[in-house]
Image (cartoon, helix red, strand yellow):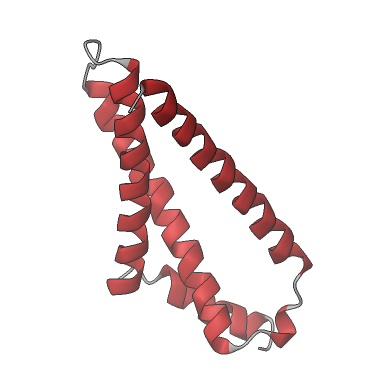
Length: 118
């Protein structure tokens, strides 16, 4: 496999992720939450907590990357490592939320039910 193919796949992954994020934002702003079921609302709250955890983990990773010097690594290996690192962080955040979580999803769920009379 050539370096260009991996880099291209990495770029396509982020483009698809950004497109999906834009579509999610549009659907969130256009939805009527009165019709949402309790399971859908809790699911959305869990997705938010997973996204929040993913951002926290990425910020933590940047502090480690700042200390480590990878001046000897090639652009090809850096792209591959970054691709799998991002996927791993997203998976870890999602798994953390499903297994134990921070309690953020449950708090958000309860507050939304109370504030929007759902």
